[in-house]
Amino acid sequence: MAKPVRWQFWYTLLAFLYMYLPIGVLAVFSFNASSSSSQWEGFSWQWYEKLWQSEALFGALRNSLTVAMTAVAVAAVLGTLIAVGLARHQFPGRNIYRGVTYLPVIIPDIAIAVATLVFFGAIALPLSLGTIVLAHIVFCLAYISVVVSSRLAGLDPRLEEAALDLGATPVAAFLQVLLPQLLPGILSGCLLAFVLSMDDFVIAYFTSGVGATTLPVAIFSRIRTGVTPELNALSVLLIGLSGTIALIAEFIRSRDRP
Image (tube, rainbow, N blue to C red; front, side):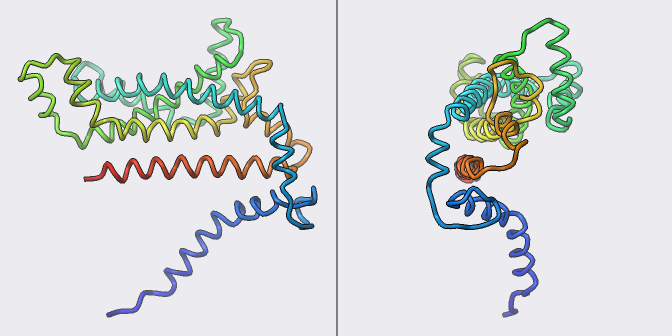
């Protein structure tokens, strides 16, 4: 039996160190007793306690959660219907419409942000938390459509045809046959879109109004004067939340494999 190649182990180790060492350093210094970001002076929970007492950051977090949950809820319904319509129905210009639907995935965020801001200005819509939600629906819709479409590609359309032949209406066939099979893909797409919405800075920065500050925008305004241990603690919590959501999405996806 041949021995494993050693360079593969070291290459993998270096790759993981390159990706996760900065996160590890961030986590360690979030427990630093000193306010310095370069000198360790002992273990302390004080920055997490100060973070808990920060009304401004928690207000921004509430705004981010409101935007993410609302945008994902709307995009889940519309994105699923778009994916089903593109996969199951033939109509003129279907391929063009499919490409337009996926454009927000590949267009830079700055372009989407500027275009959205110009559009809101053209229709004289005041910037607020609602305009951030409308802007986030655009890219959440695209990501959920992509994930649901990939799930649809592996399903047998004859199951729906059999349900229709047995007397089910198109709505009943969708709700009772197709939707349960799509549910893992919908949940995975929603989790991905939720993380992306919580993480978005560029689009939220351009489309937010007075009093509608999301968490990434609030963090950006604070780091202009330097990164504080309080922000280190917040970053660790956000990384933990994102990692948990990613694990849940992977668990759902792994259970969905044949």
